[in-house]
Image (cartoon, rainbow, N blue to C red; front, top):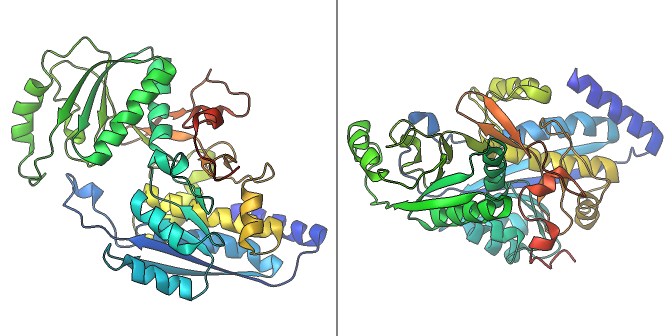
Length: 393
């Protein structure tokens, strides 16, 4: 039914706008493959086509509409090690492709964006570093991946709605863990929660499967969390996936766990079926033989943003596409219950955040009662007065 609706919409657009001239849209999804240790759980193994699968599905969606409008979409997927990334990216630039989706860490994303230059359009579909939308923002980067600040705010709003305002914050020792912990501290101050105690779990660099197996964890974690100040909830900031999955059921005091384990903020999960997502899930699973992951969805979203902008503007000029994406006219259905849009002050996509317990969607943020003069979605992450980004002025 959705495909029929898309076809009808495209046909109506074609007749009403008279846009039937040929447009060739060339896109690249560029992924840096970082060395990874084995995850705690086999459920978290990284598939070889992570991100690329979502991009392929989005390209099929774009071609469904594009076929009526004379638009064609060509997708290239490129992966490289950190050491080979610059050379591989230069090869992409030499091929004169101007629409780029990047799956990389914050530092690598910034370097590649500067290498690409101001005339290309880059969509960040992986990095959640808040600084990319703040002091380190770039005019040629838009972001469909949410920020750490958005994800932290999604959890904080839920804890405050539940009136669980006293937090025991447990964070890891790696830089990404510390940044995530800082996002939760800022979010607590923003919405009135109180961090009554903090503790750090040191990453010793050992094997997470053997050194932190359930026998040792069952003995160590209760002692580690003993005698904490009176708290309502444990907030886990473990971007490195070292300890957080073990926290539920191993605390000294029985409390709910949120953040990097327990109730987690996600852009999508495989059990999400609301707002038409079942059809998306089934198509993805039929194509790949596996369940969708967040990076898959974010790559899909990035390519659909491009497709929607091409459909509405009738061309593939990067400046025109960027201008339309940042305008009040842009909106895109994304299986989130409301249309997603971009913040004009830093290029971040507004989107609801699902709160997921490992099996179902427990809630969706922003929570009821959190109001904003522009959009309730702007209660998640950096609002215009809070950002120091000037690249979009």
